Amino acid sequence: MNKIKSTLRTNYFSKHMRYFLYATFFLSVISCGGKTITDDNYAEIIDQEYPPEITFDEQTYNFGTVIEGDVVKHTFVFTNTGKGTLVIGSVNGSCGCTIPKNWPKKPIKPGEKGQIDVVFNSENRVGIVKKSIDIKANTNPTSVQAFIEGTVVGPEIQKN
Image (tube, rainbow, N blue to C red):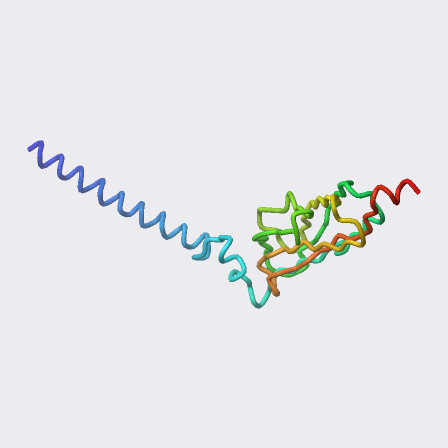
């Protein structure tokens, strides 16, 4: 008799566990729209009818003239002016001297603002400089750029 009760109890829990797992799977598919956002597919998740759009307050920042070795910091502020939710996949500088930091990792709703901090190291960069920051997002086109520019003078020019 105990064996029958044990078997009935096991079948009861197995049946309910199976329903629980089905419900959990179904809810996870519905809540994510069937897609998981990754670094590889964020550009595919573009709402073609209502895509997000990045609009910078200032797309090109001119830092003026600095002495070689100075570090320039700037924060690019932008707004999602599109109708869809903005997801930034990556932000990269055009070279090792231009480092983007602290960009939004969470989705940005239409009308909301975000910012990208950029650090430019002028070491060994004497002359007129223009560096780009490439933002890959679920926008159309999928790549948007901001720029940092100015003039770097060597120490010998500073002494004159």
